[in-house]
Length: 466
Ligand SMILES: Cc1cc2nc3c(=O)[nH]c(=O)nc-3n(C[C@H](O)[C@H](O)[C@H](O)COP(=O)(O)OP(=O)(O)OC[C@H]3O[C@@H](n4cnc5c(N)ncnc54)[C@H](O)[C@@H]3O)c2cc1C
Image (cartoon, rainbow, N blue to C red; front, top):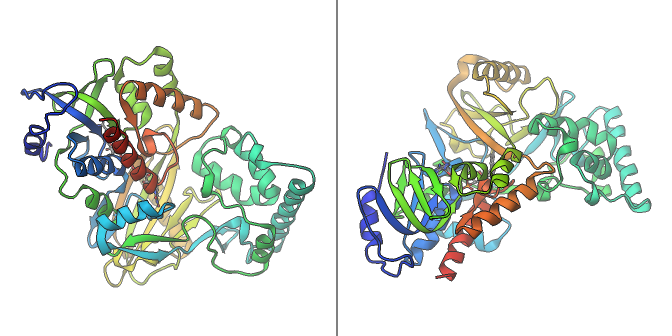
């Protein structure tokens, strides 16, 4: 379904300084200065910035609603996101940009994240909080960590030079923490050999505590403020979709339900799923990079072949609305052990009670999968059985809402081929006036903040080059 298309005429006609010549409209052909493909946070942020500089653009989004991964499903009074989506910032100017657009809708929330293993809940991050675990496990974890720290201090072991994630874990955390958490959790999440993963995705996502913190956490149970998301912003109403809605509010030139079908890189022409052909001056794409490459004509054969080297892990997310009081105080819980097929589960209503109606609570469960389709029936049964065993659900009759959401290709896999392949593709696209941005456009482990920032940066680059 095409929406807002009447906007395009008044938007484009007055802007004569289009570098490629006059703007022509036909039934199936048009020219635009900038075509934006993908209406998630990256694409919308790019459009917002171009719009504020009166620069002509057209944004096409294949889904009926813009927002990408930041859409929200409302069901029977419950608010469900595409799994937990919590807003945190590294850059003050990005925070200001968002707050200016969203207004007072976002509130600061405090994370309470834990790990469930060996029948007990321990505070996140596992490497820093062993209090409450069986004493044998604490001994293995803490002594292993001390030994690893001594090796670093006196034998020059340097995890930052470890070639792969498995070696990095052993050098940074020692064998105990690796065996009890880092290996089983990451194997379950990535579904990929850890010895073939690089460490380039980790950045701030894997906290590395100091020795004293590990010792302290072995004896004292306390919620920890470690990591990048100890507090985050989230609205009372509307779920995370209020963010893309605020960025996209009133934006002209946005076609939803219209996708990019193919791309002629040499001619600078895009074919859309509504049959239109669009000649563009610049293209900003936030499509997954291998998808963009697969749709492109004019890619050298080696680059076209290289997309086979780009891999990802997918997520199947089951959301439940429950009648009854809040079952757990945790925003999310990591499950490293094999008996749980899911790697993470949690309750957004534990930190944002308004996502569930009064007298109700919400839960979510995340399964990762690779190669093939998830079996919704099997995963659902497993989730219910385990949630009952954990005491999060008492009776199935409590469940008044269930919303399953599938996130194909959710987590990009950083293996030995990823960096070079991505760099080659990005450079080639850039040479052909295509800026590939966003979490999947850059094929990276990025946040909402980075997707918005990349959209803004692409727009500023285009504005700067006029
Ligand atoms: C499980 C999970 C949890 C996350 N949790 C958090 C969190 O708590 N905090 C945080 O900061 N970040 C989180 N993120 C990251 C965050 O969701 C992303 O960084 C951000 O939403 C990416 O926005 P984007 O615009 O780059 O991509 P997307 O949201 O993927 O947008 C790309 C758009 O392109 C469209 N598209 C695809 N093909 C075509 C086509 N052929 N033509 C036209 N349009 C097309 C898609 O429909 C989509 O709307 C999480 C991600 C995942 C997977």
